[in-house]
Image (cartoon, rainbow, N blue to C red):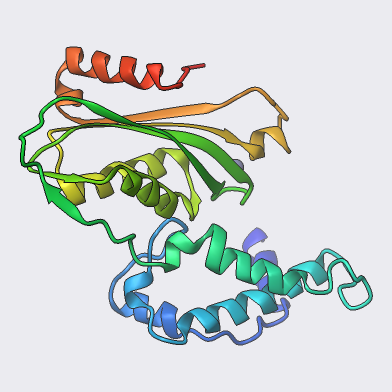
Length: 242
Ligand SMILES: [Zn+2]
């Protein structure tokens, strides 16, 4: 019975306007996922981003209209759909559409095998569940292997990974994977602490709460002494576990 009602409801739903399926079809035929925090830059061709931006603008306009906002006569929201499309595609979710930041890596010529810590790096994101802003800080602790990268590259990588609709637990894994892919360090610690506005702005409205996640790889995962040392260095750089 419920099934029949659902079928009728779906049948009577107005047909969605046609959208350009080129990029989605390309992803599907390559067997690729395109979840909220996936990067799809390698399948994009010239003109695709403009088409995506136009598509988002049109649908954002429909969203405003569905919210019963008169975007024609309201001077404040007249250009909002266009601004939303530009912001989503080129700014806050650019980490889905832009290729990885160029990170020149260098040989670790002095075979440095001590811990170094980088942070706090300010990061901004949006939660995939509500598309509400997430703001936080990330710290990296590294014992280098054969390759090293400049300190500013950690910031570029963090901004690229976080500029997607994210789930903090997955964001931090992606951060660790990307650093490992580039420099294969002997030890890698990533600590991410963030305030989720889906908990402060809506829902339980719990202002003081932050969420902290950490990932330990290599020496930091296997050696309690190395892990304790890197965590104390990260604490000394401003991280406070709450
Ligand atoms: Zn959320």
